[in-house]
Image (cartoon, rainbow, N blue to C red; front, side):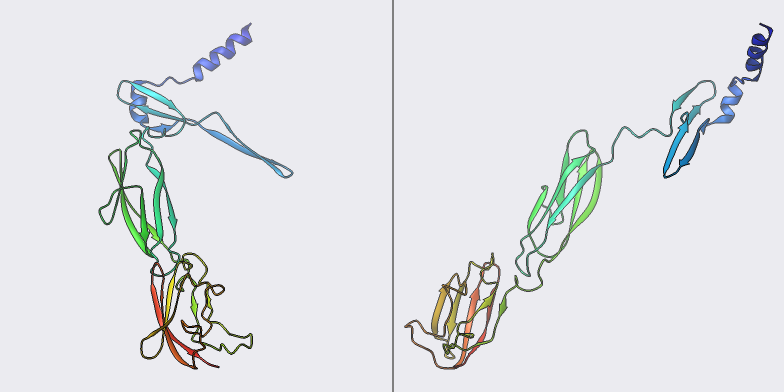
Length: 246
């Protein structure tokens, strides 16, 4: 019985109660916290003993908050940027979208682009940087999106400057690489002689059913020489010359 009483008395004597003076001196501090890491073979056990405590005290009153600094009730504004590249030069088919908004309890998000337009998305964009401002819950965020170029060539087109429609099975028709790939498949092309007279024209040139074989509109073989063309696509117009050899 004496031993139990002695232990209890020892604990009481060694327990320190915070006075008002202690509270003033303590201020805002971490009172306790401990941890340990143990490795056995290839497994690491990491744990804490208790939880760190932050005590915030004033002159006569105080309170204790369990854990480290508590997060602010107001979440920061978060969002995602989705972009589609410009397919090829001068096509202006790039797109940008600001979406997946989070952090504003009022769910009030306004996106304003550099041209003054408002909305979550912007279309018909060429390669480059586009700036926008996001306003939500009294926060103003300035950001930008970058539209890159998918193909440096004019949508992958390759226009040859010569062909030889001599019926030998080699280069008998004038082939345009990737002319049948969207959006190139919607096209119009006209061929002219050196005097500017149209000698042949096609709609939806495709290198197969619609392809120039060196004949004119009357299906007569044209003589060897230099001819000119104008190719019109939905996004650009190409012009040049062709050497027809036999």
